[in-house]
Length: 447
Length: 106
Image (cartoon, rainbow over all chains, first blue to last red):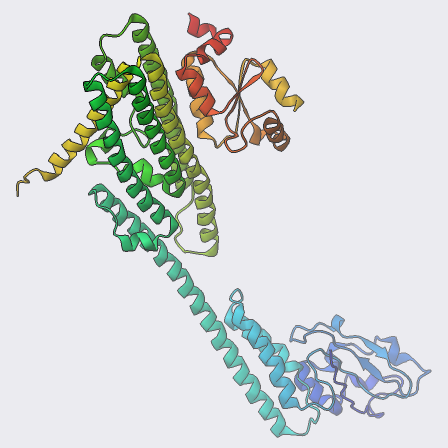
């Protein structure tokens, strides 16, 4: 750090070996120092008590005056140290990290120091502007020592520059506070927009409308995944209808068991395909699959965790598949009971998840000020909620697994011909639900 | 490894889980519905939870669907998938027969 040593000759008249006259007579040579340091040497140290001035060995001792760090009005006497300088060096040394090296122009170093503090002020908003400026005024501006104390014009230039720099600092602090306020406001607005969008989306979903392609594209990968799933499901449904028509023809024409078994296996494998497609779609957007937007309104009405309830389907089938042996009836009944128990367990798990999620979202205090603490708390809550939402995919996977396993167990219990009739009955049921939806949407509405 | 095996042996039906896993809760609901009160070990509350997790993977639990990990009579059954499949096949009730609670049998 450059240091500037102001060399001021010490008058022998004022500082004898006893030094008793320092209290009564001020040292006129210290005028410059008094002006910048804000206190008088005599006030700062009681030289009468100091053994330095009672020393008889040194005829003309010099006072070594060392000030380190920033100098301000509160500079206590303990911060100053009076010591005997090297013999023959009749100077007072003023050292400060704010004082420039010899040879530099006062205008330049004053400006560079202030500019430095100004740049720091711009980024900090914690300290009150007036308080900070007062510190600068009382500290840095008073620490500036002019090389030529008699040159009043240079002092005036310095003061003007200091004042201008202080004004700039105040302005920078004010702008910084405004920027912070604007940022907090922006966060608040974003949150409001988000909740508004969520409400709009929900309203659109309830009315059974699909979000336009433009909105989907802006939503990125998740949206493209849902669009792909919707298209894939439509294709699956077309193929499924072909398989069912083939099966119906085979049943009506009393095809042989091996031939019928082959078609039944194809239909079963095709059901496995839709579960696989749903699993992939759930990874992209689990809410889309759970909401059932890919199905008709009437189908959605009977939906359970993204699909049909296996136990309900078995209830419908029992009446359709007569005559059944006692063993088959017992098997179907046990399967129905087991699937119902599994459904209940998954339903209770889903309820627990929803409750846990609701508690997580409700726990945080409402962010009124929009401070950084509130934002951090909000983000923490969201991260925890996101983790819990990840379990939704697991529930959908388990529900689909239950549907798949139920169909497989049903085929094990039934004969090939009964399985064929069961698959036709299931397909017919869902086909009628879709037809009901179409009729409902096309119904004449009273004004 | 030893701790996991000891727990699995000492209790009839054991579910290794995490406190945040609602699928584990669903499986325990199923067991309770069938008349068994399973011993649920939430490994995120255990001091050596990480080691237990590694031990479960070494014992053959699918790392993709680690929780719940279900043991019956000291043997690993699997996760939710396996439990549900066994139940639909009517085999789960046979496995838990020795551990049915007195309350249920009354």
